[in-house]
Each structure stands twice: as C-alpha cells, then as structure tokens.
Image (tube, rainbow, N blue to C red):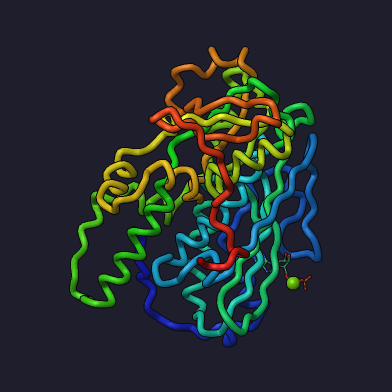
Length: 349
Ligand code: ADP
Ligand code: MG
C-alpha cells in the first residue's frame, strides 16, 4: 500500500490561490487532440466527435470517505475512477475531466500534492486530460468534485432504459470485495486503537483491501464488447450494489428480472472472509457496492458471443414488468430484490 512519505508541512496560505493551482496542476499534460485549450483560460475548449456524455460525482469527507484509512493518493485515484466508470457505463470513452476541490487549511500543500499524485496516476491509467477545475477553502473537511466528459457514436451509447423481456443479465468481474475491504479496514482501525503495536496480517484480505482502496473502472469492457460484436441493450455500473442497480435497470426499462444466487460471481477471498465474519456472501454481493463492475443486458442471440468468457457472468434474465425482480436462492426459493444499497442520504439504522 502507498504510505504517506511526505512529512514536511507547507501552509496552503503561503502559496496563494493561483500559486497553489499552478503548483498542483503543473503535473498534468494534454494528450488528446480534442483538447483545444485546457487549464489556464476562463473555460476549457474541446472539439469532440460524435455524441458527448457528461457525468459528475461529489465526494465529501466523513460521508464518502474517511481520511483515517483512505490515503490521499488513493482518494485522488478513486475520485477519478468513480467518474470514468459512469462514462464506460454509457458505453462511451472518457477523454477529459475537471477537478474541483474545497479544502480546509488543516491540509498542508504536501497533502494536496499526494491527492494530485493519485489523480494524475488515474488520469494516465484512463487516458483523460485534466482541463480545468476550481479551488476553494472549506471550513470543515475535504470535498472533491470531478466531472468527466466522454464520447461515443450515437448508435453505440447504451442507456439504462432499453432492456427487453428475455434479455440476459450479465455482470463483469466479481462482487462484494470492496465492501468487505472496508469492513477489514474498519476492524483494523479498532484493533489499532486498542493496541497500537498490533501487527495485523492483512495478506488473506489483500484483494478485498485493494478493491476498496484502489478500485478500477472497467475500461476494457466497452472495447471487449465491441470486439465481440455485442451491443448491450442496457448498462449501469455497480456503485451502490447489485440489488439497487438491478432495480434501476428494471424500473427504467419497464421490465422484471430474475437473478440466480448460484450464478453471482464471488472471489475466493470474499467467500472465506464471509465465513470468518459469519456473513452471507450473497447479501454482501447484492448490497455491498463500490465494486465498479459493469452490469448489462444482452439479447439472447448474443449469448454465444460471450459464453465462456472469463470476464463475464450471466446471472439472470429479464422478465415482464409485472413479474417484478427476484432472487432465486440455492434452495430454489424466490425472494424479492429490494434496493438496500449504500445511500448517504439514508439515516443510519
Ligand atoms: P476562474 O477565476 O475563472 O474560476 P481560477 O483562477 O479558479 O479561474 O482557475 C484558473 C484555471 O485553473 C482555470 O483554467 C481552472 O479551470 C483551473 N483550475 C482551478 N482550480 C483547479 C483545480 N483544483 N484542478 C485543476 N484545474 C484547476
Ligand atoms: Mg475558479
């Protein structure tokens, strides 16, 4: 894991707003010919082909992240990932982002350098240009807002609203690991508070922690689907949990859905950790969230094209709207799917 190596402290106020912006953004380079003007003018100028998709996410300290186990470099990386993931979920390719931060003066310049190092690592990984943003002060915690812009041909953009009865429901990767990673980090923090000398062995949870701290967006999937000649009928990324996302697809497409418990893809570390914590792995996979996998529907005719592909699991199919959304358990009982995804507006119960 990436540790905070930077121990010196430069006060933000010593740089001035413009000095700080210059200092933080000088690491970015422009890679896309579609970026006509990036940082430095009143607005960025882009020249994009096809249709544009625009998406934004706001991350608030204490609501979406906790500084005590989220190193700033990882936070910067994740802030970009959650945005480009939404662009891929439209079957589009991201090309530019803007980054806005509100920061209290308890953060030294070095902390922001780390945040921007993480942003820059993600920018390189996902091949996007940082073309602007805003910087302001905050009286409480750190707030980061990123907007991503991407594009795709009109006929290639995939909405949530076009799934049809009998379409197959497919998910990339595996589910539940990011949520368990957070549980492990939370447990270790409590152990550390009691015994600061404890040397935890986190190796059995390495995949879970990585999925929480350094999630990746599935930039490979839109390209893979295109190579396979598959255009999904609907698509969404899994940020809140499988249950919520299934319900979004159903509602917006006006269809029902059947998901089979035994088809839900789980990493071995999810299975062993759920056993250790006496948790139900299906519940974790359905409601955990932050996996940033892609959930999509395809027409049945396209099944041979994805069959056996290790990137995909067919977990169910769509029904008539009046049949509702159900999970068929291993014991072959049918239980209604309800959205229990993580929701920052919901009161803690
Ligand atoms: P304005 O007064 O027009 O809002 P600013 O002085 O805030 O301009 O910003 C100057 C330039 O730096 C603009 O191009 C803006 O988009 C960019 N910028 C400001 N803050 C950030 C940031 N945190 N990250 C990236 N670019 C930024
Ligand atoms: Mg500004």
